Length: 286
Image 1 (cartoon, rainbow, N blue to C red):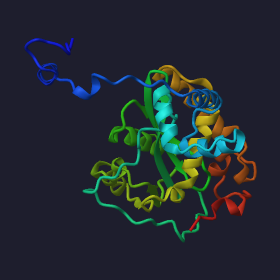
Image 2: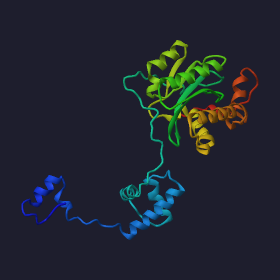
Image 3: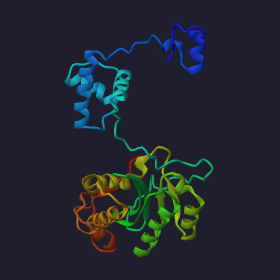
Image 4: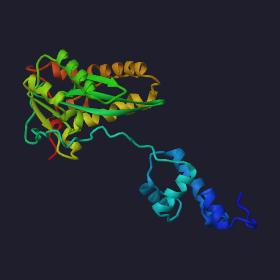
């Protein structure tokens, strides 16, 4: 469109009218070098093997297995050119609201010695073929039993309220303490007022301290690797049916190593009876 020998309009004027830079007129694209093409082929093979590796691990892997010393900046450029992106959990389910009140962590020196002494809750993100869902679960800290859970395609207060209502309806008594992280849903007035109305003390993890709620974090690993990633449920009703079956099996059938190979349901319902539980199961990380 730009004519270098135009009789009336100069190159500068033509470029200004078209909204292009004059420096691009004489630019000739440089093809990728043979070395970069070979490197992209290796990156493609690695991605097919493990799509969850980031640039830090790729640097180590390329040097260890292929003898290639490549910096992260170059890897990022080549991966953008290939249209490759590391698979990772994008949505953050624990975004804090600075305007909300934060409660102290009450479990640091507490000895949890019976069921329904402490409950905990958390939200996790579930990838789906055409979108995603959020899962909230309420767990008894002592027995590891999932007392209630709820599923939704939006992360709002109703998601957690439904899980709490299911736990209250199923359990024999209310807990002394309820522990969560500092996510905006759990620091909202709707959630904290619900717990206060039930006479439950509120405890919250320290900032960045995922270990403060480690039992339910471990639950997420189990449910994802044993149900979500294996079956890839296509719709919410199908996902809900799969989770219903998995939580039932987790609570009542599968032996739990930390509970001396008893089921969470058995330990939760055997309060007052002679039930042997591994002591290390309740040793809290500092």
